Length: 422
Ligand SMILES: *Cc1c(COP(=O)(O)O)cnc(C)c1O
Image (cartoon, rainbow, N blue to C red; front, side):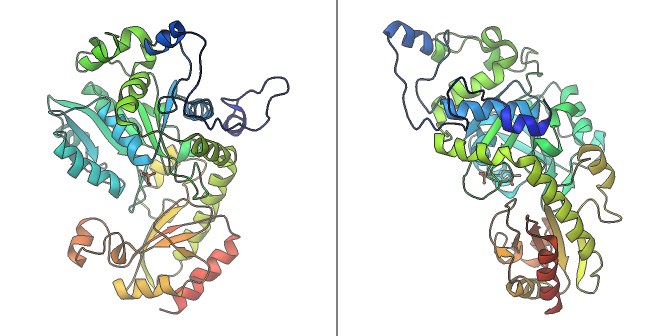
């Protein structure tokens, strides 16, 4: 099946007389006839649902669908994008371990790595994703256990050279984890370029309607956990009667451990209702993400004509953008819907631009069907001085615009009248 067909059919094939749309199994628990069967479920020798923290029939369908969309062998839905990243990493790293991450990643992930994981004893070195192989290699240490990057990163709208970075990770015997939130598997499938694990905030384009928090971890099944660096996968897990993940589950060792150990213990589960809403979003994802991309390309082209008010625009299709070639390689069908651009004149002028918008919503969110806008300098980055902002790649006049699915003429008209007021 091709990708749009998978969005509709993967994971759920109703039988004779069964519900055509995905049913919501709004139940925490599932009943069995014998203690013997329940014992087998706990031993992981039989498969079946018994408790919704670990698995649920509605969520299971969505997991199979997303795994299929990414070209992976399995997936685990989580309560948010943050919990997906957290579980994906804690499934591999623990206190005393080290990770290399590109610096241009989601701000929440930066905090997770630099603050919370640091407190847990996990050290993260941030590297410039555009640096040479030699520069990036210098960040690796004997205790490095993973590398992390983001397909399209905010606010630079930087496109990740997945194939090159996967090569560096593999040379060091560690997996490459990619946050594919902004691209979605419709525009880019990182496994095709050597990534080993993909995470998403499904809160963004996958749900797409700004109704449900969620995340997902997807396993390519390609990474060799028996290379000597990852004993947690190859020595018996006493909390599961001495099971050895690589022996019992082969290629699915990583995603099985994520579920039966990480989700069991940390509990950041998606709800059945949440999985249902996510599935509804996934069904129309290809149509939406291509239109988001098309509208964003038109908006970026218009912004490029307004050099009277705008100092720069970050979007791959704008002439001269440094990520043009990488975007052509990794995002041939669309560059997604998020644009960053900087208004001349600083914080107050940028704030006035935003306050002058009539249709476009001011929200702390991106990747919504409705066009929305955010001014980092007066919201998420409010506490920083102008100098600190620039050091973090955010100018005082930077605007993050998430282009929605309204008629593009209406989006352009609103931007034009607001620009004319500053
Ligand atoms: C929003 C976002 C996250 C975090 O996801 P939540 O669902 O908000 O927890 C992670 N990565 C990227 C790229 C995001 O945009």
